[in-house]
Length: 201
Image (cartoon, rainbow, N blue to C red; front, side, top):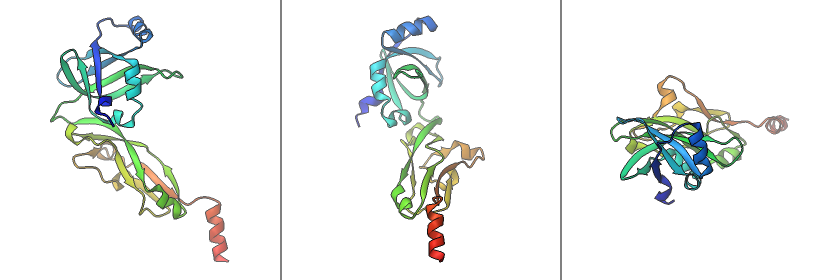
């Protein structure tokens, strides 16, 4: 995957307000804001076509991005992206500055590995969460969290506490005492019950 998808060029936006935002969207541009860190919030505009292409990659949402504004290169992560209700159009983006040595909190996807192994055991894999909120230093930011189901038995429910967090990474909800469900390998209704009855005869 090219590192180019993690680099964006932007311009400072001085014309603010709803009317200005509408005009920008007609010009194939996206209004956005960069906030956080020890600097004031910065209103910017991005090229819609380039942003639309970049955001099609899952990794775009869990990587530290480099936003070039004039001669300044800003490290940031996506905190919110507003989309049009039915058109393939991005309406607004919120970025948060990233500073080395300062923890960041963000959401990363969960990748489930070896689901076939659980299915072969007669289980039905049910995802309770496809992403998790984490806290870590920028250097420790993972692209995703892996959950290996190769040794998970039918009838097992995995929670956050059952997952192995990468080095330097904390699960935010778990730190709050909320051990959320992530995935379960359920016994299929009907077929499994019929099979058990047949085996018992």
